[in-house]
Length: 435
Ligand SMILES: [Zn+2]
Image 1 (cartoon, helix red, strand yellow):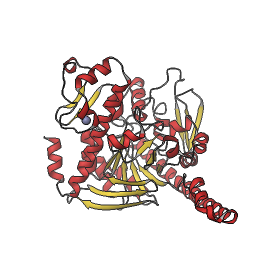
Image 2: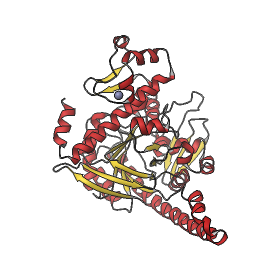
Image 3: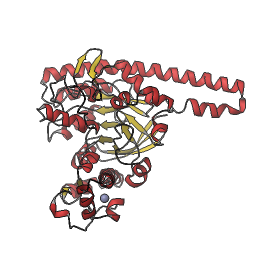
Image 4: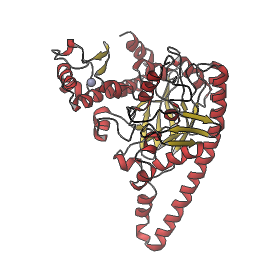
């Protein structure tokens, strides 16, 4: 079961509020989806993620779960939800962005253009998946062809390959509610010809992913029917139990296509029309953006995509970008930035921007991280306490700062949803941009 219902729209913009229904519950949109790279949002329990952050869903990285612990273990555990004890909706990305992140473009890939050194590319790679690259890993590389991408593991340097079919197979084995096609994400400074090649390959791969996805769904459905029939034959009264335990841990997932095209209007629109015409359950907006032009590119894409299907903006999470993304038609967002900067001592505030708690001015500051925030951390702890925990390198520092930063962005997007529903979008946007 997967549906999307639009409940409110903002006239004159592409902003809308809606509800996505998945086998593991609903997501009220717009929504920010915290990233749990390796089946954990770093330093938080699932209960903290749900109760203290207010997260409705989580997105985990296929690339990392494929390498560690591997799909056999995830299958034996009964799927992602059981393994990580998260009962709500889940997303997996295709693994492509991480596989591509180093090598094929000689180390020049990030979500926003401007990274040019290998060191910067490594930092961007870490940002894309909230992991540190092992110093023991061999130099990673990626090589793309029309059938997929060859890459080396960041854990041990071993060689691997993702094809359209294996990416979908792995994501089905992991068992998330919403999964993505394998796509080619070109370098930020790729020229028009290179970006055109990437959208053509992405369209070719999208069609193949769709075919493989349908095959797996049919296999699951027929397996479900035969297991139910067998159960009814053997022990009629246990039919429902058998079905629930053996099959429902792996419900058929919803598949999202991905739109690429870099910063070129004609390519973004062409990609949106081509991918939008395919029978996907929703759409991801991927790739890299020119700094300051992200919202414009999202608007080009969302104006072309079918209105009645949900849209996910991949890897964007700065507060201002979330507001502009919503205004330009995006429904859900994921990004590792809130937790990554939290672990480094940086916290978002409504009126003072981003604060670095390692600065000396916070050592004796006994006010909350953000006086306007009502999260667990802000209602119980002070800047001085967190400044001390970070200096003392205590684990609780990352947990408390992560709770605040995730609550901040999740809540910001919830407020945006409320403003859309109440017809107060313009006031909300203006109060955020010039408080
Ligand atoms: Zn807070």
